[in-house]
Amino acid sequence: MSVCKPAVGMLLRRNFSVKAKAGLEAIASKPPVRVAITGAAGQIGYSLVMRVASGEMLGKDQPIDLHLLEIPQGLKALDGVVMELEDCAFPLVNKIVPTDDAAKAFEGIDYGLLVGARPRGPGMERKDLMQANAKIFVSQGKALNSWANKSVKVVVVGNPANTNALIASHNAPSIPRGNFTAMTRLDHNRATAQLAKQTQATVNDVEKLCIWGNHSSTQYPDIQFATVKGKAAVSLVQNEWYKSTFIPTVQQRGAAIIAARGASSAASAANACIEHIRDWVLGSDGKWVSMAIPSDSTYGFSDGIITSYPVVCANGKYEVVRGLELSEFGKEMIARTNKELLEERAMVAENL
Image (cartoon, rainbow, N blue to C red; front, side, top):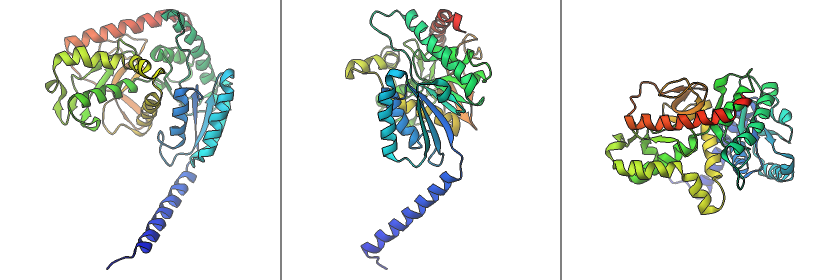
């Protein structure tokens, strides 16, 4: 039996209406969670807030209160971000709290996305940058300790992310150390894309790739255990390409983007932050992802640092992938990035 076009349109509108109503009912049935984003008016923050508000991080049925933190000089720009959020009329946004007060921003939060950090200025030495950011993350760690929920999940995006996360965690002793993480998902995504491109595959075909160590130029993007369409990645690429092209490309990708567009990675960093929290909360479906977490002294890493491991996420937790036999090259690369993390820790020791 044929159905006329107006009838088809009517059916489609009716189905859409039913789904929309079901979606609103699902939203109404859940209490909102509080998400804090620091540096919310910055490039990454601006990209991030919209996607968090749309439900890409915690699900399309999870209402949220957005707590947006900026420095006093950034409040005018933050007002503009808030206006745009309001104009989007996101169904999931229950409340927006813009502020320059960390206590207000972190009050009762369930998730902390620490994006804001001091960028490296002209002539600034690495140690100077470390010390400048240490002050920021000492303060934010203390504010989290005083005001956030004790089950808060924290990801640090602002660089140097690993050591900033370490500082924040040491200044929030009432929050479990394992709840403080740093973002290496951007490096993981970069590595995945480069391997897929080289093997003429898609990113969906790549599995068991990982990032070890620091979110810096010493990181170790590892394909030893990776597969592409079920085949061992090391059998699909030349070792020379792996060592001389792949690893440096991933390590230096941030600098290459700055050189190309005159600004640092923003959309891709926001995307990685979304995926970091999403998989931590909702699970990675058995797949390996990379997260910088407190070291458990395995795979050659020292205790007392925050370093990237391959992990699998489920039930709101992450677990390090165990039992991997590293190559001698892999051990050397891990030793190098571990050394840098220890050097960074020594530079900020007075803040721990």
